[in-house]
Image (cartoon, rainbow, N blue to C red):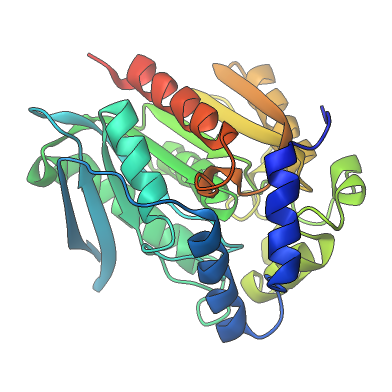
Length: 311
């Protein structure tokens, strides 16, 4: 489950220590810190067919979003993407190149959704926005050369959580039809003790202290934390959910809850593909400027999307 730390990741961690990057503390400062980290670790944006900033209606609100259309002729399979950041941090700009790479390498329309963040908007605001955006795309993807009948949800960390909980909510409400859930080192559990949380508590970018801080911002009432639509590992019934691709990382405090959720889905009869990057840390898919293995991860996701959503 955990091998030797990748040398390029070790180099990146040294750089983050040098710049004193921290994800928890003052909310505004932490948001700036994450954006700074993504800038340091990222690469020049890759070209795709078309990129446009759009808005998605959501229960009387307008959600900012960004549509990435690949080269070629559509309609393309559609992916609703939710960024990570502990439900507190993250932005469209910070995840721009990851979404470009996913669109380019999967030949999918990728629509990145700028959902509301905590603590200004605690749970279930992010879930409500993610679900509304996914539901809207099912009927409106053609506006961006997409095919809403071939629809997946995807995200990393907090965004992986939202992809899982949107899938649960869509099953509960009977709409929209989701053909795949892409759960990239997802947050699936609340405060359950797990080996990876202790083993990787510090020194590997995301820390145990960060996790507690994010939870404190996101969950206003502790009773909510035990709702499966907040943390899906609490769900009793995981049957009849979309096929899942679950990615975990060896040096990640969230590793074991991602593995546990993949196991629970499989036990419930859901088709699951699980991959564990033993030498990687949390967030490595945004580190393409330094970590070569980033591209292996993106290519594996892209191949899964092509297989699941292809005609």
